[in-house]
Image 1: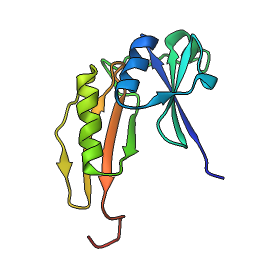
Image 2 (image 1 turned 120 degrees about the vertical axis):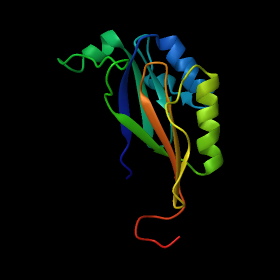
Image 3 (image 1 turned 30 degrees about the horizontal axis):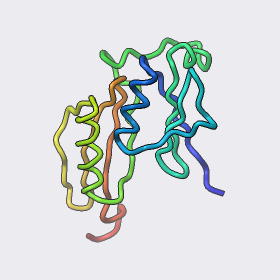
Length: 135
């Protein structure tokens, strides 16, 4: 059985965040959604739980990171192709996201990234050869 990953992400405006991820082509799973959170299906094994800040506080006694001043984490997602990497970044920018870098082609790997409206960093990459493999 494959393990599943559920990323819990605090968001300031749940409807805006849901619209952003839908604009990228992801769907939500209403079975795991409510007024305080939306489950975004990224793949069969990866889900982003967009939680209102109040709901997110139920999971931790620590302060929630102010992503305008600090990085909480960088989420990296493997893509099927360079075109998928570029397409997701373009959709993110059109939907209100931003980027702080340019695409990088290392030969065996192509990458680019975007930042969602709540400041969460998403790295996108396509690997043509695994580490140790000849390209």
